[in-house]
Image (cartoon, rainbow over all chains, first blue to last red; front, side, top):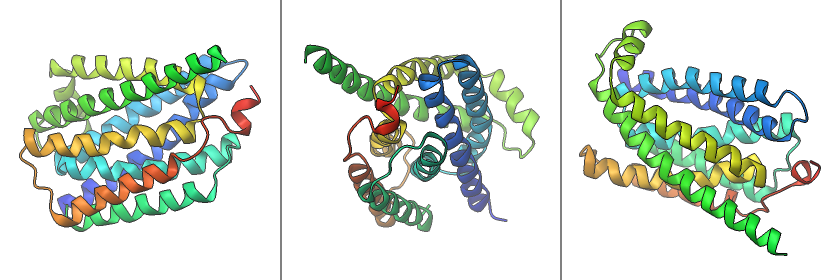
Length: 110
Length: 135
């Protein structure tokens, strides 16, 4: 497996972890009890994500790794819809599609 | 009315700060990653990170980002606020060319433009949806 491919996979994994971590932080702002539990869980996930992302930064340019992190929009939106019942309109879905296409273009010329 | 305007101003300031913290943090993170030994093993990487003094500055930036972010989330839905902060994708890439001499080819530039357009579309919604107004 090439160094670039490993770097790309590390960014994808960190993006999924970020999606769940962000939902935990939002939960902390709306939960009536156990706010700090959500914050601790969210921050713990971010530390875990940081290790994956550092590995990616060792293998990829920041101008490749960081835009690829935009894939966290997909995970944030899916988790927000699933766990927070937030509304996602058609415009946002189109935007997410553009972001995924953009990420693919960035990978095409890392 | 004034309360609503004040809340909106707080949200805008919070979102701008989020982009600034994101950009500074990412560039410093890349700089630190460059100083780490090239190994696939987890512990030597973590150990080298903890011995790097700049990691304290990075943690400081992320703590500021976290405090600011929690404040932003009090005023907006996560699926509205989070995409807006991705304006830092453009700023990070612009600075990466200057600071690290990274090459931004046509496909990558088109990809970043595509992401930016996606962010613009994603951001065209009100700050609080049904879930937010329930609190």
